[in-house]
Amino acid sequence: MSALTLRLLPRLSERRFAQLCRANPELQLERSAQGELIVMSPTGSETGLRNTQLTGQLWWWNEQRGLGEVFDSSTGFHLPNGADRSPDAAWVSKERWFALTAAQRRRFAPLCPDFVAELRSPSDNLESLQTKMREYLANGARLGWLIDTETQCVEIYRPEQPTEVSEGPETLNGEDVLPGFVLRLERIWGVRVTARPIA
Image 1 (tube, rainbow, N blue to C red):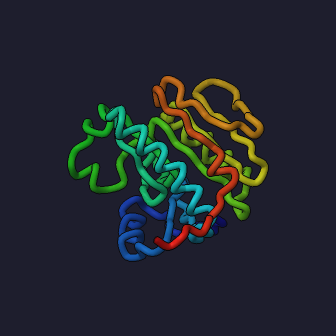
Image 2: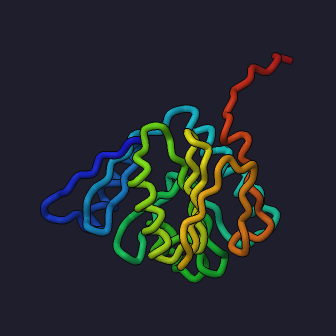
């Protein structure tokens, strides 16, 4: 999805941003650590299908393991650096999630997910997404995937390690952050909608 960044004066506060989100539930909004408002367009249909594949596979693994909570692209997180971000898919360990108060869980949870994934759509700026991935790592993410559906490359982000680039992988492994999780990429690389016979 393409994004528009607005530098507002005065700087957009966390409280004002939350009010703005509540007043405009149809918009997908983020806030940078500098208080800039980031307005993102809705995803195209193919990107939406790919997001569903990603989140669905992650959800199913978590249902089997019960190790944490899975969040979709409409979920906001208030990062330690002050930014409010919405990854395309995210996972938070059960211990960290239930360490939050009920009030914190109702708002943008004040933490960075353990795992984050971003899907690059044709209109996304790669450099902006790479900056966002580095921001997640700097704020506590333990594993991140930037999946570029145009080039079929995946950038894998881990703390204190160089970014790994994998070209055309068939699967991705959740490593020790998501033990036993394997993301199958065939439906993400080649989203196809096939007509089903009417019974």
